[in-house]
Length: 129
Image (cartoon, rainbow, N blue to C red):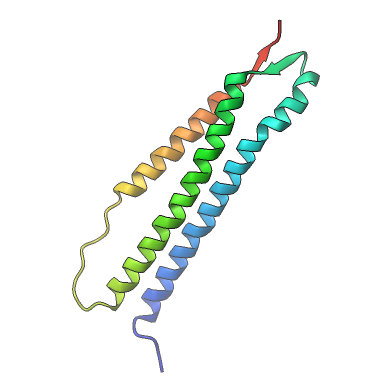
């Protein structure tokens, strides 16, 4: 006995798993960013008398948490898409293609966090006086 529309269901599952892997990587990176300040604080004294900016420390924590939340949102989005696509595959009715607005918003959020992290790392260390 074969599964009806097996190839479509298998493709849907592969896409779902790719989203999950990406979300896990983003959450892990968020944890790394959030904990990176500990590394910078430990290394700061050896970097020619520079100290970590208090604002930079808060930003690093916030950016890490944003990445963790974004990864969690990606898991939720992937789950909803997987379920919706599975129902659409089994349905005989024609369905309209899914919109990509949420994908674009998520990509813009990640671009914003990435650009912010670049600015943070380029200005995280300030000379002590």
